[in-house]
Length: 574
Image (cartoon, rainbow, N blue to C red; front, side, top):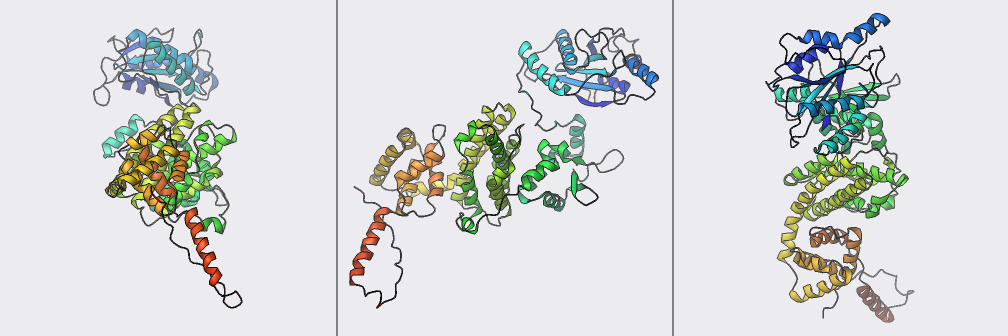
């Protein structure tokens, strides 16, 4: 059940005309009162032909007029409006039940607390099976104004209890981090103009798409302007940026003026202070040696950055929570950057994952943005790269994004963040599809050159020794021939299959993996890109160098040279 308190107005008669009218598309059927304040003595205009909306509005507004005449300064915005809607799958509620629900809502809001004879005047009108509208005038009988601060939270909590008491669909408790739902006016306007999204939804998508491209708030606004978004910055006398609002071209008010939306009205995490906090995180520049040792492409760099996330982050507390929240926020930016730069046939699922994950990026826990510098740098590098990933790099990155989203869902669930956990799980669904699609060409190529039966048997023994608890699932996985090829390739490059398997399983637990062989393929391909020293080959090379040194001229007779590295043979097969 959803109770959406609307912005206050001052036209009681106008709102009554809508509630008792035919609706915008003749959707209002049999408008009538289901209940009202205790002293309501007016007949129902929906059932009594002699009752008028003007008389009812005059009666509801009476405490407002009395206050205005006593204090002189007119009360503005005195109309409180709250539609209350049941879920489509909920049972039909009677007028009596809707009346009881309305009384619980006005009590929770502070409009009319139970037992308060001097509370505000209010009514509940029903003109459809699945919802009612509560209208109140926010001046009490004693002339005071009701205390409505945080009324939305109290009403939301009461709705959760109503759902339980009446056997209705159970929704999750709000936490003030969600975006505002589009109003009916916004949705009708978008439909009238042929827009698929309302202006605020459209602007949110474009701001989030721009974030990976910017390193400061000023850069972000410049990027938005270059993308034909209308930007209205607010600056102080010194020229410093104090705030901003953005507009969608063609979104005009009734006077033909451009409509602008402040960032905080678009989404809670798009205010200027929050954008500055994570765009200008102030992390120190990397040491040159660290830059030289970084992986060769932004795609591999992003996978390396994701490798820093560990399953134990699901049980954090205190400062660790702030760092985890920062990483989750940055993860959303990395998913968005990947969606923009991935090959065209992989973008749809990644974009859906990015849209879903945006709700998981914010919670009541304040993020320590400096902690996510590596992930944000990876997102910016991908956003600015001119070349797309090869198949194995995209497969490794999407698999790493999938695992990171799973960790985010677990952490949110452990912290009781119901909406965020749901959003992360939705993103996991899309990322799973993206990971499957990214790996498919690589898997086909690997399976086409699977090693011989004897080699596969030896590699199967490595699997049983390295990950005994998952070995049978891995060997029964349709992707096992491809994994055997990857292990054979890695061994030929100087790696030990047994060690690679243990490292891969340590980085990504396999218990929940739908196809563990595929998970290991992406992990091992990424890990084995750089050849590792083979101890047997290295020992043989050193023996060769020592033997040749016996016949070599003395150092005094010949300058010292560096021996060239020899190729590293694979291990002997029995």
